[in-house]
Image (cartoon, rainbow, N blue to C red; front, side):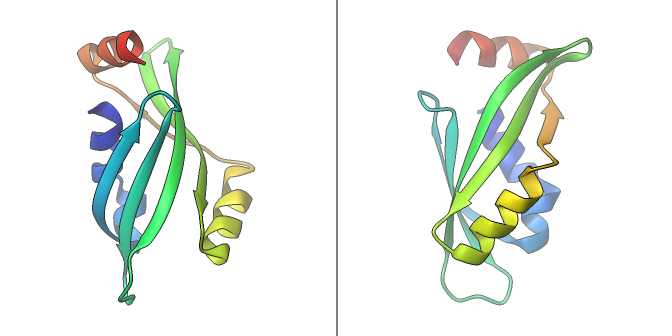
Length: 102
């Protein structure tokens, strides 16, 4: 749920479109995301890879890779993730729960 909550509340994702569906694969630490991009008629599928990291402030969820079958999106994501990650601190209980499950 922590992963899904992060995706659904992400201002970055909302900036480009509307999230239609999120399916979490905890075995492979990835999320399949279906998004309808602004101005488009067809949905786009993304796969976002994540991990959990302990910091002095608590546990953070970190997304470090996004893939897509759409070349422009895949290339843009590859370029951006060379120097960036998406990360958010999880509430204390959610961070502990996420580490136990994943």
